[in-house]
Length: 174
Ligand code: NI
Image 1 (tube, helix red, strand yellow):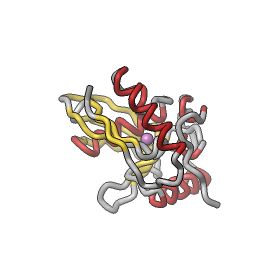
Image 2: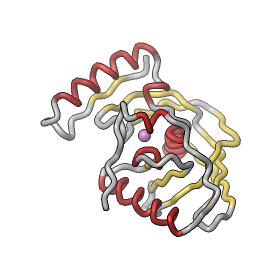
Image 3: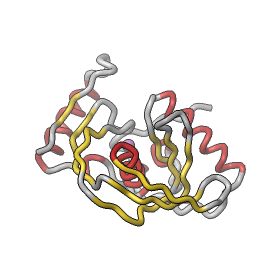
Image 4: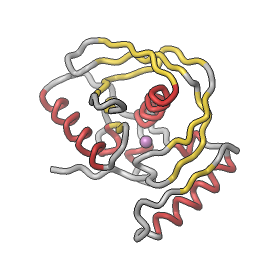
């Protein structure tokens, strides 16, 4: 069964995900579904709420190594970095957003081991973006007021012109 990726406006994307307290076969299957949906999109990362599951878990693959992180949290962050961020739940819209450049993340892996990852630039951005999904926060919440206004207009335009798949709009830092 294929899961659809939920898009902006779906209430599940604005809700907080629950802590995972049981790593079982069901969770392993969920991770499989998430990875399939992510690769199909295609995207570099996907959080469980994006397929309608309110659990604190996200998957990613930046170097052909699929990874799943459970109950992730950022324990330290530093620096600043502007990146043209996109989201599978807001397809086609790319917006320059300023966030910390480096993060130190702690999570559980699928075996239940605690792992820590030091990430910077793209991976650090991915972690922060996916963690936001687990808190019910979307890119629109990270934009300046001016960017949000323009972003919503552009996104609605693209949603209406559903024939122009693959089209994208970029909004610079404002
Ligand atoms: Ni996203």
